[in-house]
Length: 251
Image (cartoon, rainbow, N blue to C red; front, top):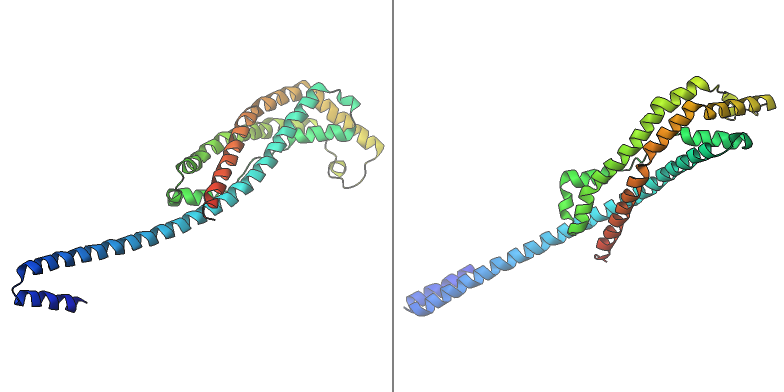
């Protein structure tokens, strides 16, 4: 093709047709420029297509992780609600009228600990690698970027509650409640005398002033969990909905 163009140019010069030569040269330049622009356009199209494929991959991975974490959050939040309700029951009920199993359940609900520990492998990878910039929806990108701040605020409240229980409630129980291994873990059925003794000891522990004071503090520490928790969950749902909407655009 280049030889063909060169032949035409030489022929025009040899025939002393300068005007036609200049027009031809300009036309040739325009054709070359059009070819370059077309090549760039095709290259850009290919690059955009690859970027969209990578964006879809990121969106699907994030959606899977956020859905899993929403389920984990609901389990942890339900635990906190059970603890809250158990503290309220202890503070407002006549424990001596309740069955032993109910008293032990209330005490166990207050003492156990569970925190929201989400999977964040995909999330951290997207943030740290800069792949968040692949997300074309600015609102979604902003929500994902600030999610860690909301998560930290919520987990701080969980951690404060957990540490107070570890450092204060557990030591008090260890010092003031006689444990019966067989009864607590159901290794064997306890005698009537053993069950009565365990029931009385548990009630005495719960009715003590210090135990009630400790529960007041635990309840107070938990209050922010029920403020930050719904905010965090709503943000997770919002992110999931936006991820689903963006993924649908590819179908």
